[in-house]
Length: 178
Figure 1 (cartoon, rainbow, N blue to C red):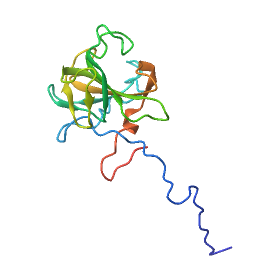
Figure 2 (figure 1 turned 90 degrees about the vertical axis):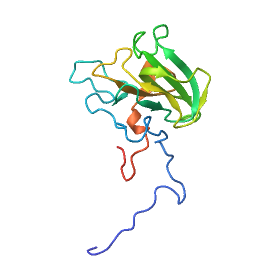
Figure 3 (figure 1 turned 180 degrees about the vertical axis):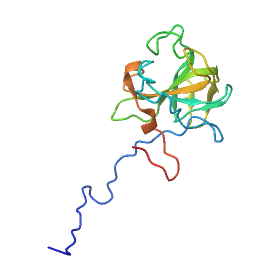
Figure 4 (figure 1 turned 120 degrees about the vertical axis):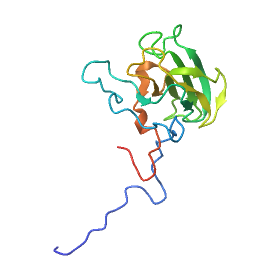
């Protein structure tokens, strides 16, 4: 009918909101470059010149503090020359992995911080969001200058279990994510 209006029906019962998915805070302090470098986003190959990227990079000067993006237990805090966390040993250099306190669909969630200059936590430490884990560096196969390599892994602490970290970070105020 001309001029008639239709009221859409709610898909979810009132009060039942979708679960939040952006659990993680920015892994760098305010005043630093806390957004990912546009040149090598998750899944990209930098124009076919590199393998698909399994994380995102935050380009910052060496020594910039690296902070825990969520609360959990440190399950790895060392150089990866003897432990294969990537496609090869010595891939991330100095690296910290935190298993988050919160699971996703009953699966553990791990956050990896790679190419660090220094590590200030040990395996077994419990960290809260915002706790210092180390400092930005250029260890391992870091290319293009010093940066924090940041990964989210779901199910297993494994190179093939990554998810797009940008979808796990809380958006900036008045911003969203797709």
